[in-house]
Image 1 (cartoon, rainbow, N blue to C red):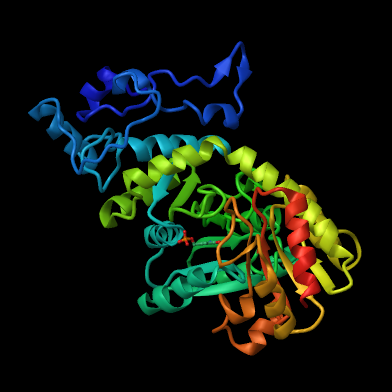
Image 2 (cartoon, rainbow, N blue to C red; image 1 turned 60 degrees about the vertical axis):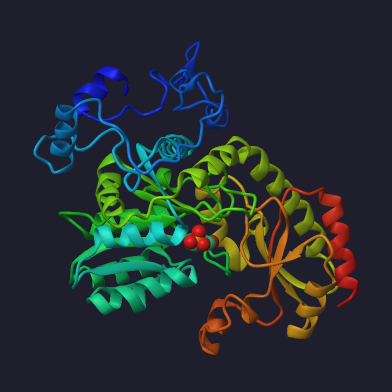
Amino acid sequence: MTDETEADLTGATPRRRAKAPVEKVGGRKLRPATMMMGHGYDPMLSEGSLKPPIFLTSTFVFPNAAAGKRHFEGVTGKRPGGADGLVYSRFNGPNQEILEDRLAVWEEAEDALAFSSGMSAIATLFLSMVKPGDTIVHSGPLYAATETLIARILGRFGVHWLDFPAGATREEIDAVLAKAATGNVALIYLESPANPTNALVDVEAVAASRDAIFKGAKPPIAIDNTFLGPIWAQPLKQGADIVVYSLTKYAGGHSDLVAGGVLGSKEHINTIRLMRNTIGTICDPNTAWMLLRSLETLELRMSRAGENAAKVCAFLKDHPKVERVGYLGFLEGGDDARQADIYRRHCIGAGSTFSLYLKGGEPEAFAFLDALKIAKLAVSLGGTETLASHPAGMTHLSVPEARKKALGITDNLVRISIGVEDADDLIADFEEALKAV
Ligand SMILES: *Cc1c(COP(=O)(O)O)cnc(C)c1O
């Protein structure tokens, strides 16, 4: 839609995007995997370059003075419609805009924003939504830095929080939301599956509870979809309003960048964009370009990693030195019945990150980790290479013992993120490492 004519109207440099993005061929709506190769970019605006150049510039030239004025009328709200086009690189750039268009495609979101990290995305979301006295209701546990941000940092500014456990039932969610609703609930923030328990949040139940309890203005539901999105879970379809990503993980997928993303309706995204424009938490053009490359293989990489994880988990499940494998693909009846039900309603696949509980404790876990030859001993997840870590001794070392116990973060727990290597090679690696236990 942004051609020269519109650029004249909005008073800023046109985006380097396609005049008419190809979204359909012969009436067939194209799948995201196809759109990742061209959506939002017009080579003819960049001297025919098949791939978008990396636009290393801090500012963009206005076509004329009146156009510059019109742009700022848009920015300041003197003219309706808001700012469009490119002006200054703290606000946006061509690489980031193409990336945002393509991120939105995966979950059919109206709009998206790119950030310098998952945490800067989450922090910008919070800052744009809450004020002193407000309450954030969240599922627990959350990514540790997100918990710190809510409880210790926003807490300093008079923001309150209440939480419910990730696997909570509708009744349990109702109870927490009803209690929170005596104050002003600014945001409902979820993370599913929870790390490292892998407990899934019932997003449909949270949305139904929110709609039942809040009669007037309804607090938006945001969800961190880093572990399963966008291939294995798309929570906008279950009633979430905003999806948050650490693009550092599966989306970036090569363990070579740090970035974040937020997806949602134009209205919510515009609110968050205003804060991002103010504080400058956008990702840089080079990172955006790397992510464009990553998105071209997103489905390939995630499908392969998911298939690998299914094979590796099937091997580990019945191994005599293994106590239990916490893998979404193994959810069934019994104690797991409710989680299995959420899984069926919310998930398209089981992902490739899981919890391995060895028989024994820290010595057994360490012996296993130290004997791995293909899998690398590192935190993080979602890369092409398989990673393994020890939450109790690493990422969750500072978590108090009682909470660790409640979360199932035991000394015999090893977290594994399966990559795209050959599955049988990985199985051989785990088989040999288990011999060392
Ligand atoms: C890694 C991660 C984050 C933080 O993302 P960064 O890119 O490291 O800032 C947030 N949420 C989840 C679930 C994560 O795994």
